[in-house]
Image 1 (cartoon, rainbow, N blue to C red):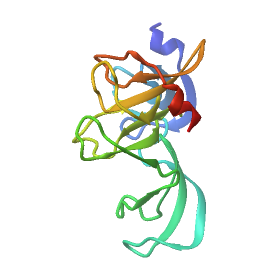
Image 2: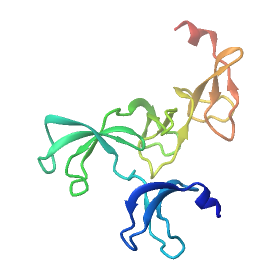
Image 3: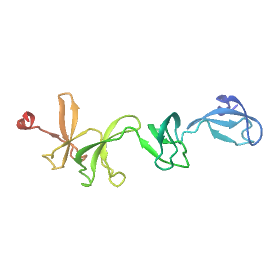
Length: 186
């Protein structure tokens, strides 16, 4: 008996190619449906579709600006979003949590501004709004200022054992920057 057969679970559904019973098997990318007469029949299919996100709620009264169909709330790979009910014919989507824009300009390209964003794991970071042309990103809160060591035009706030401190945002420098007493009183 093979390892794949050890983890096979009957599904009470027949194979569309040979008529044998389908079973759930475990693979390196997760569970999938497979024909029980493998290797004679090599039919497989994903257990569930994860490409477009499943519908959570139909938003009555809200219409798609592209095709005038009803908008729906979907749960996708990166969280909740609003999309057209006629997907994939219409690909209109709206982001629920729009990134917060800061007034700080990007130190790398000088053209864009820094946005507060969230990774797919929920961690907050700041990145240039000109992505993918500019790929500047930092994981700490950006602060306006200039590094006294390398004159890099951006500082970042970090929590340390001694409290919150400012550091140079340049990956090449990264040194701590002292806060002057007159700046603290303002």
